[in-house]
Image (cartoon, rainbow, N blue to C red; front, top):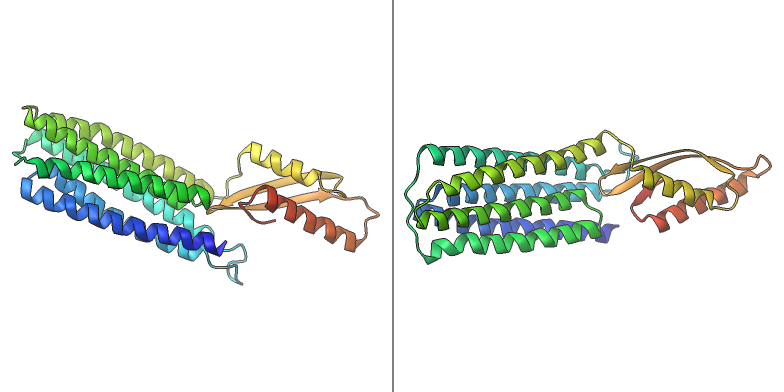
Length: 280
């Protein structure tokens, strides 16, 4: 468990460094060319650095073991981090939408050369690599905040491609293409932020897991020798982990010592079959 969290923290740190490099490229290119699209995209990437730091902090806190004040652990720190990431994505979406509207109202003059054209392409390539890296690691260690960060980087990739497309159309005499493309992507960005934020809030509010997961837990418990029936199953997400509450029936003649053996077998089998389970 600790090793997985260390991997997650390292991934978030690498993400922060990568976003910082991309941000510097875009901001310098935007200042040189006069492209408000490239400049605003660079400022957006600068906010991504802060987003990666928040994810790193969330992973670090969630790795702490349970204590007296937090008997169920600190896993939900990841859900809080995911919620902050969703807010950053939403802010980026509305910012891009506002910039696009302004560019329609007041078209801008842009100085173009091969270097300026290459910046959004290089940025798109780097953010795509970061996105895939974070999503792969996030799924491997069951980290919702890293997966959300991966989705965020995918949106950054789309934004960079949008900037490149706008520069291409501008060079062919279509200055309004850039803001129109930007508006479409802005809507997609805001919608994705809603989905990530919704999932984070549902976890923070202890919403039940999907019925198929609950059914699987019930089947595993019923397969344990000594269990007559499973009266109730409740399970909820806490970060990348699952917390389970069970009410089971055992034969009335079972001794207390045997009941503890059944209890331990249930926990061991559940954690083996569903590795995300942290507590039963």
